[in-house]
Length: 159
Image (cartoon, rainbow, N blue to C red; front, side):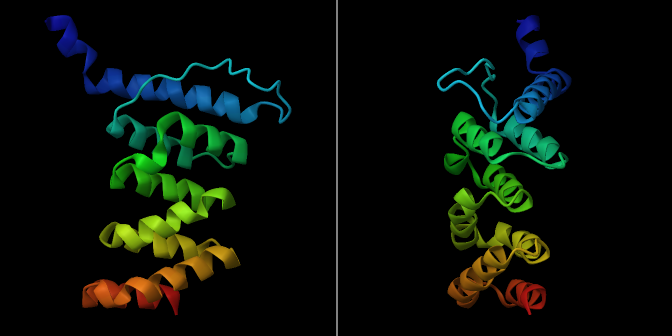
């Protein structure tokens, strides 16, 4: 019983995430060409809170390759996670200009308007024309359904 409680301690959960971050950083540093179907790294199953922590730590990385981002998405089923996890995932997509997942950012802005406000700012500072167009397009679709204060904040970011 005592062992079980110890296993769920915040420090142990954070250490586990730290070890996963190290694995992802190693995967990201690998040469681009690899033998197909050979996946040497075994990733642990993480709780949503641990995935959030993992994504936050990965946000601190200067660059993540499209292959690494794809692998992250597949490993943790990121599009199916809760809004908190998807929000961090969208930040990674924007930061690393992972074009294959731009549709997931669009979905987040349309379906999770309250949490999406901060992402509009990220989209605009990205200096990526496609991401800025995505921000404008999504805002046009949802602004009528936003509360006035939120709509005003987003308007100031976009225009």
